[in-house]
Length: 188
Ligand code: AMP
Image: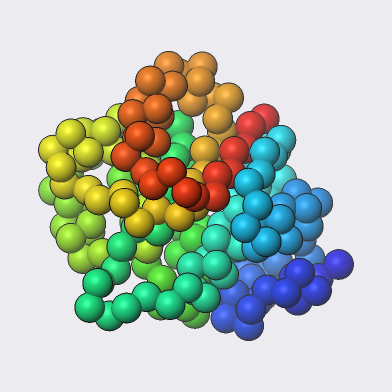
């Protein structure tokens, strides 16, 4: 199986080839067609299996194909929640690499660092937001973030987020999202 056989579009194929990804991993082979078809997904996968590209590649493709109107500006259309700052930054770096030949923009919102730079990035606009729950809730409470256009939600390492007591926070975040959306949940 190749990424091309999974109907991945040329700008993403070019980025994957630059990353030396020659063939999809098993989780990528299974999840990419399902996500591209707009289905919800429950995936069991640990870090190291290629899980990030399993959700990120089809999300980039779906968002790249959606037409956005220039006068509405760039809106957050996919939200990826993950338990730790390190994971959020790693996912953000991966998405930047996979989407480098598209005009999509992603940004990460994490705790433990100044909020100002993150506010500036949000003001400049992002299509994909990767966040840890705590800082995202702060921004929601301060009404600094609009999640009304989110069409795809990812709960990454959902089991760890539960163990870390993030469930009430995740419920609150989800209550700010549109009811009609695609939801992907990954757990070890
Ligand atoms: P992840 O499970 O998403 O943290 O990915 C683990 C590692 O595998 C990362 O270094 C990825 O860059 C790499 N990787 C992911 N998918 C592929 C692939 N299809 N071919 C080669 N390497 C990959």
